[in-house]
Each structure stands twice: as C-alpha cells, then as structure tokens.
Length: 190
Image (cartoon, rainbow, N blue to C red; front, side, top):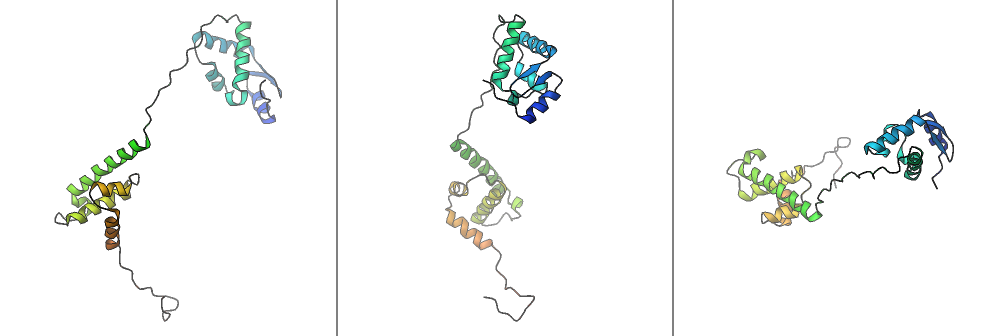
C-alpha cells in the first residue's frame, strides 16, 4: 500500500502540469505524461529520472506508487514484452582504509618537512642553523599547515620523541612579560 500524501504534498502535486488531480491517497496523471514515460521505457531510459525532471519527486510519490503506475501504463499501452531496463553500472571506488589514509598523510608531510629541511630559508632560518632546530621547526611548520598528520608519527619518523618536540615549542615560546594593570597600576599581580 502506497503512503498517503500530506496536505502540502497534495498542493504541490496539484500545481504540477502533469497531474490531473491528487488527493490524500490517489494521484491521476495526464495522458501525455504517461506516453512520455512509455517512450522513455521503450528507449531504455530511467523512468524515475523523468518523474524527477518533471517536478514529481520520487521521495514524495514513493517508488511503490511509481512502479505501480508504470505497470498499469505498460499493460494499457501493451508494453509488457519490453526488455528489462538495464541498471546503470555503479562506479565502485576503492575505499581507503584508515591506516592507508594515515600513512598517505604521513608520507605527504614527510615530503614537505624534507623540502623545508633542504631549503631552510622557507622557514626564515639561516643555512647554518642547528640541525635539530631546523628539523623541529620544519615539523612545527608542516603540522600547522597540514593538521591531518599525526604529530607523534611525524616526530618518530625523524627520530624525535614527542617530549623533545614539546620542549622545543616551550623554548621558542615568547617569555611572559609582567602585566601592568592600566586601571590600577599600584596593584600587585599574583
């Protein structure tokens, strides 16, 4: 049994030029629309797409109702012997597993870090900068740009523990300045 139409759906369907009348439980289509669907069936086209293109949403009509009306039209216009419609071939994309995606992001990040190590001027560092500082700066820069990579994996690839990287971040952090209370400059900070 097909689902009933809401008041809003009835109003929308009754405004469609392909519909004669739509009530709560029934819809009557115009003859020319039925012939258009039959021609599409003869060509092997998708009748559901014709419904959509004509402003008759499959979601509102329901596939059961559409299949039923198509069956009626096939028997009315003697189209029962038509070959079955070929289903569209679905393009199957290879799905990337989480581990493969993680490895791909890591390899992309490694390439970027290696580029920054080879060209330290991209990090505004001089060529004679300490190698550890250079590598950790490159890791920091790439991680800030490419947040998809896991930082611990990137550090491990270059032989650094995450704690060493964290220490590096603390060393480059600006030193805390004393806070001066503008409203009450004599008040001491805690």
